[in-house]
Image (cartoon, rainbow, N blue to C red; front, top):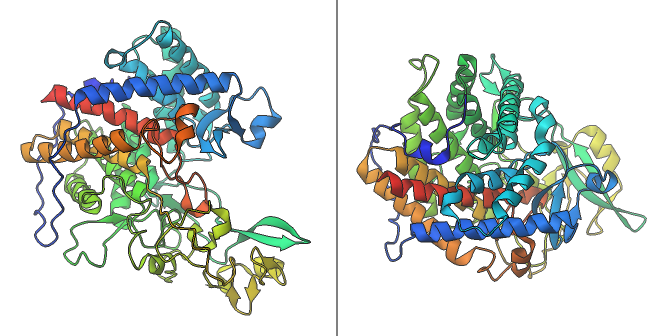
Length: 553
């Protein structure tokens, strides 16, 4: 089935019913400011800026300038590696089969498909087209990659976006359609009829610890005593649109089943939300142990910002798909009511801070309590537990009250504890101290660690989802409410976080990135407070959706 063009989709006759659940009565979200307005002209200027930036990045990559390569990219000069983020002062080039690889060509296809909204110089469209096709080649084998659930990001956000572009030649178009069909069939193999969900990861989690041996740093991976066995992460909701954009009934069943089980198992409420009006998403749920967790969040129970975006955006696509479902929906729960709760939840979390901290709770006075929460009711491991200050830039702190943690050694397997016996940690203390695990020493971290990073990629994702909802809902009040909230987010991103206007990462503009201050994986100390291609992708998408929203009014 040919994927609709974005503008066609957004101005289509698909309508979402108005909000049917009871409106919040105890905790009211802050109303967006009405001082300034984000305009269509600004959206178009953002798209032109993005086009110019990515042409600049393409030139750097072609000339092998300013690159920070994954080792595999250095070892095999024939490999097509793809820009992912700004790391170590350069463009981080990612190897094959990584979940982020679809966003770079996908962003170029988005710009090409909406070329009428962009100012072009001679030869630029053709250059962007040839570059998009070139980098797209790197994902051909991923259509049969059954070891990951991320095929929606990798294939649908690249090959699927290419189908929007009217200038795509017919031979390439047919090839891309076939690869998309192959990818759907591959993704469906990860669905468990017994659990009713698509399994996310096949790997077991390990704790990454740095020890000092003979005066040198040694990084090792240590197994846990109680690892997950069937993990599903909230990001997986973003795969469902890929399955729904098909005429195959089986794929629709998989999508709705996954949405149902996620809705049942993946949500909790802030303790202050006594009325339980604003559901929050865990990052991961283990269907083997029936325990939730937060591999990428502040703690096992917290509000990881981008995770709330995956949640909201994912259920928006589910509700849209209900209008064209090829499977019986009578036994499924009310996804529309859940979507409205998620809209209100993100609105409540944002308040008037349109670019959130990487985890919404990271700046709370008791943030350290969430980080140190190891309740047996949850999956007890998260990356934050092993995040030593030496792994971060000197000015970065992941949360308020950041300090070394003393853990129970029993969280590691006996084999891992034996391997660590007698070893010193990065800070010169023994890692295993009796029944305790001390990965980062016991002394306070330097006072220079002050800045809690925000995440512009989450903001861009929120804005795109809000515009999308505002375009298709028939509820006038909600339409205006969430379009205005999206406008406020986009105005903030445009004025203060574009790389030509942000004061924190001046080099980012020279490298070709669009948005500064995204945060990738805090627990792994990866891509912190830096441009990332998927942040740029959703920023471009949000600008396109802004234009589509105005056309639909």
